[in-house]
Length: 167
Image (cartoon, rainbow, N blue to C red; front, side):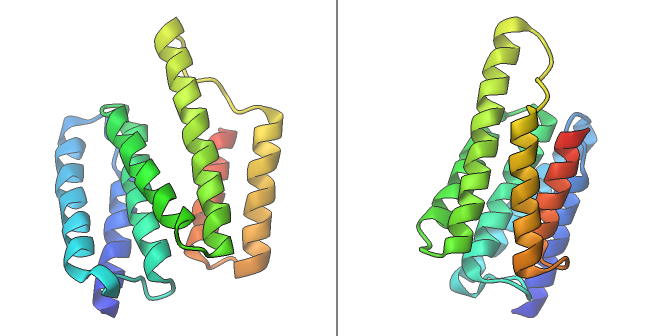
């Protein structure tokens, strides 16, 4: 079981490191995504990372896939599908921390959809986050660090996301 968790972590890291705008990376990403989804399907209730629970693991898998599709800008419908799947898992868990993470994912998805609509309508690049958006992301990140520590995977993801939005 723990082996599956480590393998899933490695696959999530790999998918997030690929530049989907490059054809060879998209091909590799599709293979990695297929492996991740197969592992989730095969392991079901036993699917968990060594430091997390099933709900957070499943949400992290789908969020990672959605993030790849957003970064690649190749298939935005798939990005939205996987983000929504991740959000749904978190919202139905009943866990307060999962609910907060779902809210963050939902806000990210909403901002992404608004930006994409604006970009496709005007032909401009995606707009930068507003100062209040960045303050909110920073507060969520700080709260996650205080609650779970610097080594928590979701806290790290929030930190990476926050840093990405600053650039």
